[in-house]
Structures are given as C-alpha cells and as structure tokens.
Image (cartoon, rainbow, N blue to C red; front, side, top):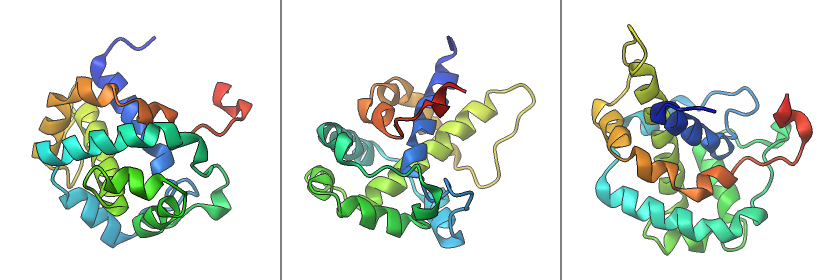
Length: 166
C-alpha cells in the first residue's frame, strides 16, 4: 500500500474527481473556471466551513447522481453546483455550514489542484506547476492529516462497476 502521506493526500484529493465531472468527459474547465480555482485562496475559516459541509454531506452521498456517464457530465463549475443543488438535501447540507454550493465546489477544486501540486513539488527536480499558489500548497501540506480524514472525499466517485479493479 502507499506509505507516503503526500501521495495518500494527493490520491485522497484525487477522489474529488467526482466533484470534477466537468473533466470526466475529457473536457477542461472553462478558462474563467480555471482562473477562479487557481486564484482561490484556501483559508482556515473556509476550511472549517468546508469540513463541516463535507461532514453534513456524508449521509447524503447515496443520493448524489452518478457522474460516470461522460455525455451527461457538467461542463462548468456552475453547472456542477446547480446539479448538486438539485439533489434534495445537498444544498442545505452545504449552506448550513456557511458556504454556497459553488464555493464548496471551488474549494474542492482548489484543494485538488493544490494537493496535486504539493505532491508534484515533492518529487526530485520538480517545479511548481504553472499558476500554483504557494500559499495554497503550504495550506494543503499543513492540513494534510485533516484532509485525509474527510470521509466524504472517499465516498465520492463510486460508480458501482468493476472497471475500478483494472
């Protein structure tokens, strides 16, 4: 099994792939969405809200729509947030923690990209990916253990098919 906490954090964050069905169809985020994610600042206050929202979402995970069918995948962060809001209870679970659904999605993407950047930067000879906010990478490193404990991250992305074993 994986022994490096940085790799585990990056992979845990990669579970957010289901929060990024925008790219599941092989699509990139629209430029405006990419700029929004890359300029988003991860903060202690935001992380507290995100953590609470994630805990609130845990019992609702079975209601989340499967994003395993690429042709129906949302193409933007706004569309993803709207789809999440359409699921009974999801919007309330997030807003009761003090975030909008879009903020939750953007925070998730920022954690993902910053986590991958943190892992990348730990590789011999590696440099920070273009556009990476060092403050966000430092934030992810500082909160690595807490991020790994967010159970909701491990629940996203289950498509109930055998292709995961390949």
